[in-house]
Image (cartoon, rainbow, N blue to C red; front, side):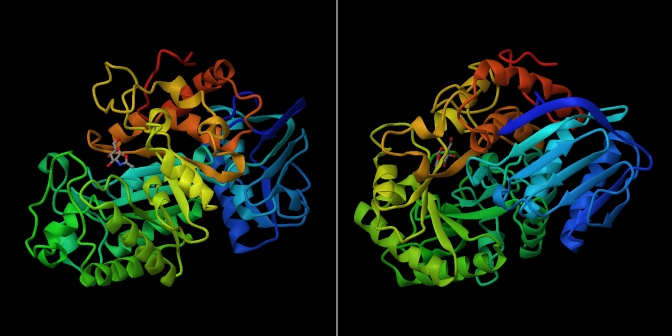
Length: 484
Ligand code: NGO
């Protein structure tokens, strides 16, 4: 129980242990399809640890002998994702108010089981609820494209650490990655390349729906981003008529930012966005659509403000809520809008405060802490340095509530670690940038601030080394961490 990441709110070891045996059974209450499915998720975890195939059935108590009980009965105080786990020598009881809580608790059981050999769980009690409801990772699939299987790998690994939002950055200067049926050239032309001139790629709507469903089975919400009005060269290359001068732009394979803009004064721009957001909203299970809004050097401020205010209406008309990078804080935000803080230059952080003053809540992605594309050390071969060098300790040793004056706990919806992919080309690179830093972000977002401390954390992180190796994760062996 000492080595869990994220650290649970309350963990009390007890004497004894529970052993998974060939006759161990799992019962679930209530016996709904969803709970039975969760029973099988646990059975798979047990099977990979012990080799035993544990049967799953509906039942209203722990099975008589050697039982594990997953229950939604009598745990109403645990919220949407909390869980309580009791392990004694006779039984294991995992209860939650919602199925998502059971799923999170199963991840705890996964980490409690020894990697190999006998399935012995030390006795004790855990009671655990997340600090923040938004615990995210962002993957930029524009600068380099990552296919369905790569994204599923990211989703699987996120699930192990109780992360619950995958933000997909789906359009940028270098690529348009989501099929829009009303505007097919977006993917035909805009999806045909990437940084460095590779072949790029895109998700068909069928692919995308498959990812949404795959994430949902792991209680992870996919938040799609169409970046606008800047970061739009791929769209401007696909359709000449989207440009103010009516001339299509050349596809772009470099890494500069801030040179493109949708034509904010043209009516066609808003018809285009209504089609794009409409099709995307229909594919989106969660409440949010991310409209970007960052780095709009090629758009006049007054035009930017009018544009973002109008686009918010389009998002709402399609039944979704707006999320945007902190720059949208300088516009009049609709109720329920979220802003994503990323700048670390105090002068620029003013937009986040403007958003909070309007009642908007904030997702924290401070670039010098959780930008997963930063180098770990000056010697790291891939990665950027504009926000600093971010070793594992830098990524962990900060707290959301004290990051920004004027932004306190109740203003914060959560934490998200973005992985921009200018230099990141393969799933192996993705894993290297994410791991182990993303575990720190997962813990910051889940675990209480009190009791979080780098010296204690680094030991728990080191103990995850064999687990990451067993999962085949290409992680950075930081010298700051005493790897087991
Ligand atoms: C910035 C920029 C991205 C870059 C990233 C690289 C935001 C929100 N906009 O972050 O386009 O890819 O830095 O670190």
